[in-house]
Image 1: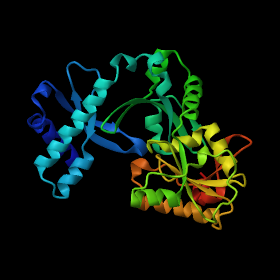
Image 2: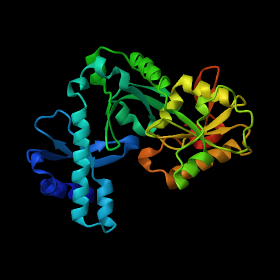
Image 3: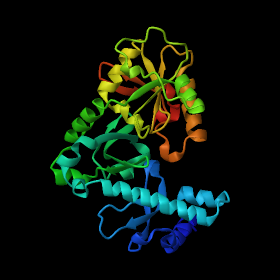
Length: 322
């Protein structure tokens, strides 16, 4: 028995007791959706009569709160507040823009996922392969409510409705990403200091016009977007990777930390590529949730082809032989 689904059924029955009176006509139903890397999650979809946007609140984290001993009343109130926040975000989006290509074209961005782990998901969407990864496209709406971000995966039917090709989407997504000002490449030292001490100021190397003259041996750098959500997609943007190559002209390795960020390790690093591959696999299995894993191998940048490529020595032998 799926205990999360049983919990979701209870939420559907009781959630109106925790919503304001103006949400009395909201209808709820359970959804089981395919997410990254074959993960299936149980959600409650909230359907408001006067809206074509139906937020889905996934139940796994709330069920975990219950298992940790949180009172059911508190969890239910949190679910209600989460839905209200998402509803406010939906209201701020011009709903007609969901079907109008001209209205949403400036918000189309690439997303990077592992190909082998997401074949079922990718079959529903225009995409292209890059090494063992795949690029697909998402509309990331700029409207936010209390830090929440609304997005929509672009599926095959959207592309057909807009009369576009995958190449059109790729070219547009790359242009949109290259002109965004908030991408960041910061040292791991600065990143950890920011997390531990709450320091907001970090040196963004992407703002530099000159190569980094002194690279501390073994120093790692975190590459992501301004939201730190699906920031690994920067690996797919030739202009961004060329800037990183300019900063580290002696070359660098790319460690796939997660779908949200990657680690840049300038050469030489004093660690064998085989050891780096084992380190990536160990971190994936012990510190990264399955849904957020990107890849088990190490990459490097091929400046001749303006693209990343796997470093064969970082891949387990049996995987290379498949």
